Image (tube, rainbow, N blue to C red; front, side, top):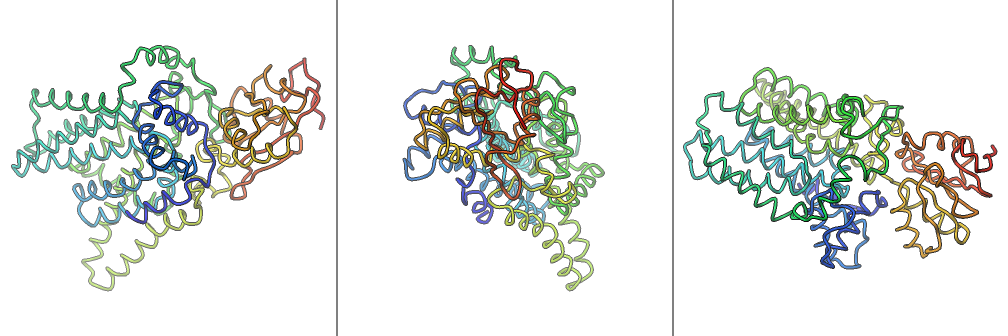
Length: 514
């Protein structure tokens, strides 16, 4: 847990803000003034409130990026312990040690838990819900009625906190499916209807106590335009060489259903993937009560997210621990078989498993720090394919801060800065003292019209259906400046003058010369 925590909190400000993170930072600042509304009310309050607490304690001593990301980094460290407790209850101490070591070192889990997005808290509380369900079942089978009640109440409280972290209400199906499926086995675990009502009431009270913005009229007003896509800025996503509609309502016609299957195969180290698939095969074959908890978790998660037209890599961290637990389970089974061969074979097997399994993830994490998300497994062709698989989620605007520092230092007075993330552009321009810069979005008819000099910032993770023509046209020019991260082009800056337009069919503008 200490090692995992260090990986998550070390150099939190090494990467500049992502677009969504700026909204969290500004919301936390508003919270300290008593204003809990604003432009980010589609997300629950809990994470923003935690950021506000860190901001109140740290003041100006830490970088805004560190303050904004610290709550998630700490929650990510705590998740290592929860993985250990859940794996121990389900599959024993050996599996718990392997699973928690993987959770501590997993390059993908670490990278995405360092982002200021709600998915880390969602995943943490979901694991606590599963842990409480498993402990309640064990207490019922042992005849410990008081302990069973306490664990059930703890699960309800964790469920309320989970929903106060992110509005993924469909995840409540996981404990319900697990309970119903386990009841079909030889178990004494039963929850009467009256107790179900009390547990639902407790979960609702915890949720409402941690997140009361859904009860404000202003939130409903915002939701009326947000749900049908009225607040959507981009609405598409680049994945494996193609750009797809990326809104929930597109369903399977949006980002492809196999998105998370590909993510599993290319974002886990090869040995982790092998052991996780082995653990999954064992779980599907035996389907013991312990297996059913994890299978319900993975089954509900993949069924809903695969059918949805909206997919983001960060969503995966609420299911990744399930695969790490299965990998730990498989490792424990392998070593249990090796133990029968005596001391030397067992030690050899344990050493080999540790080097391949945990060592593979730890090596990837250490060599990619602090840009953990830029890891792509050798099975996916290695890191050179980062711009091809999941550039939006893996880059997450890395390098944009450095690009804005260059533009702020060298651009003309009153110049226009055109990008896909104008909030981040404004923040870093203001930090550099360039209040004179004009910030616009890369949109047809709006881009590069506010000033004689226009700096267009292009990112591999910000390729959309609405800007494809402009990016294709700009790619024929030599960039004015390029920011590279781990050898990859993270941001390209193009300098346009004299009314040039980045869009090829904007007749009102002069053509761009090669």
